Image 1: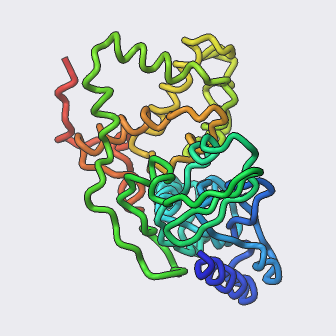
Image 2: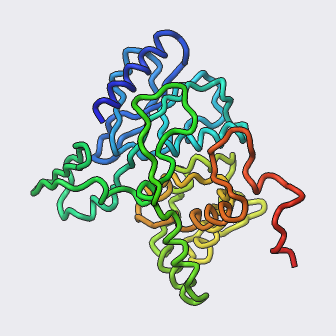
Image 3: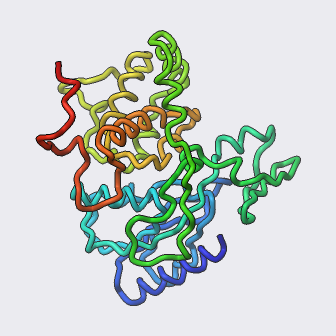
Length: 315
């Protein structure tokens, strides 16, 4: 990862010096372990602040919406797919961007690693295919493959789909990942089992909206949960209000979600909220052969109409 960081600094410094961009959006070292922070640099001399490792899970496309500047942005596979979606949805222009592509082998799951230690974690360091975790009373070396975020473990688009510069050679894509195994398990449940599953899944939710705020697709000026005229959903943590929020938000992402994992990573309660968007991703893939963010030419299937669209659902 040191090589990635050095190349990111080099490219960012050059772009700013040459005046090709007004700013570069990337990551700086966070104040807490496993929490690198998004940052914006506008001066070439500040490029030294930029870092890259397995703690850069936040989707930087979230910071592009409706910006007018010329922007350099660091983008792994899922980030680049969300950038493509932003371009299609007219939230940013392609000619405004210099995309610095980062081939990615996955981000680590901070919730999983935190659960392995009974004391405070002091540092988490990349060491190739291993992760070194130092806590107050111990030091562990873990295999990175065993502590990846769930979305990264099944990712089949590790390389950026659009980019202007690359920080390293493209990595081999995963060919045998079963992306929808968890969805099929839920689909096989009875109605009663599904109801209990989602009751248990959403019970820890405190309606903090961290999932919505971290999502690069949730850029509406006013979210439906904040509307008061009309009021679409209650403001309380009543189970039905909570369920309504999560299900409606998932439907707003249908055909657009790239499974970047930002929602689940941001959740303070560690809720596996991806199962909702994964189900809709699976349906779009099976019904339309569609994967979000792989092109800047076509709009999502639920945003278009074709005469030969499947209509079996119409009774």
